[in-house]
Length: 461
Image (cartoon, rainbow, N blue to C red):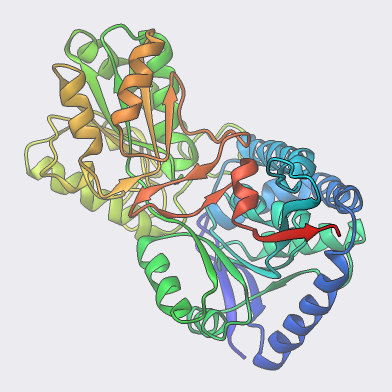
């Protein structure tokens, strides 16, 4: 029997194997989901909220088991593992809290003798395809709102994090959600494409690569199923001449290197005003040199391995190509004993003398490397920040709120930050432009993609 296999980046051994969901079993799961959803949509939002809150509580109760599991599955140090669960709770609680208002009927101007309103109907069955890098955060963006909106959910998680899918199932079962309302499956790419192409699901929310998003669109062609796609990123930051230098250094280094740079909204390129450039670079390099690269199960480790050796080698190739083209690498890999070609362990790197002819400044790295360029003014910074096929988030460091707003209006991105980065506010929608994808999650806007409008035009005689 074929299996989904998680090979741990810690030591390269097989950590988890699970059999793929067979065709007959999948068909049964779909039938159970459809049956459960019919009753679930009839429940009040308050009833849904109570059960979804219990699901969140059940997940948080597994914290001590989840944190080391994350380290084994995808390499995040245990000292940071709890942070993802904190974000998971923040997003889930927020989406539960706003559901009643977000899902309330829209009522136009009253007209005597008529009752007119637009209700928000659940779509039906939502397929959530979640990635490994923030496996709880990315999945909860869709799962809790989908359930709160009255839908059933099928979760297909990344092969690297199969235990996360099982934890969601455990939490759902412990909370007492109706049987079949939330289910998880283990599918390969072909079986996933076949499921989408069958038209059995009403919405697909996918987080992953551009190639993966294109595969989703091909599979969904002609089904009229909805697609929410959060794809690649090459998120920029701009440090203006009036920025708080120390704050910019600390926050941007964290934004570039946390989780070994394996974040869709990690800072991958930085543009700095001339007057701050040298001091800024020195500060980021000092932080990079201070990381402790090693086994993520060790509490002293501050930088764990990348998800797999091939991913680390891809970033090494980007760095080497940039250096060959004239860039300077400012962090000596020799200072990190674990770093070696063919290993998942990769030292952080800061590159200067870079430009947009280099892949490291234009193509997604998804690793602990950042290129830093000097810019003469706002106009040059905006031009370079927009010179990308991606557009998820962009960050501006400045003490001028008006300038940040004006520059942000010119940026081709889904989110504009001022004096922060690599963060998701559940009160605001999470969306992207260009090859970062389409659709939206979180906030009241996120509920619009999980429901369909239904108009009522009732005349009283």
